[in-house]
Image (cartoon, rainbow, N blue to C red; front, side, top):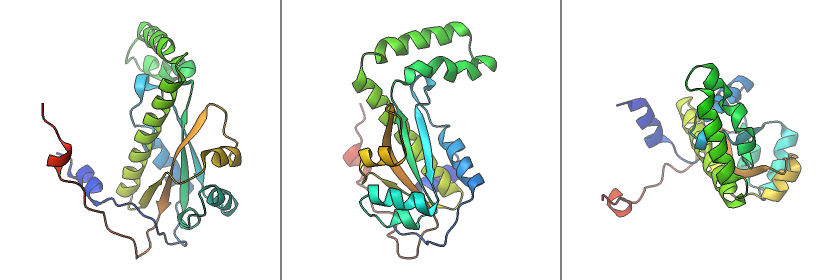
Length: 205
């Protein structure tokens, strides 16, 4: 049993108040995103993109689109985690490194591309669902990575998606799914809040 991962899960809490003097280096930001991209996605679509909002000017723009929430200004960086629609169009390219490493052959790629195209092409609801799923998995992976690095994080759904799309010039196929703040926590944050008992949420069948 990997107790390090369990420790990160058990000790991570959602941070809403940050030390505005805290800093996260560009190399740490890049490593957080690298680890986030190890999250799973259907067909290995990797249908996500990350915008690291760290400059004061960019923070002010995001602050306005996030209904004036202070943590966007105080956190060292806030990630806009986007899911991508129509990701099936780039699936062959996304799978090529797996072919190059000998994980599977071109016939598998062809089959997956055909399956994904058939199920996704005329199904915008499925495209959106997959974008939401993949971006959410990446967001949680990023937060656990931050916890492992001794950083605090918080997921935010309180923002205007249209405003975020406009402020950061997102493409029409990019969906802003979640904001994730990362930095050094201030002293007055709540601890992890108690969860419902397992017996209330688990059914064994």
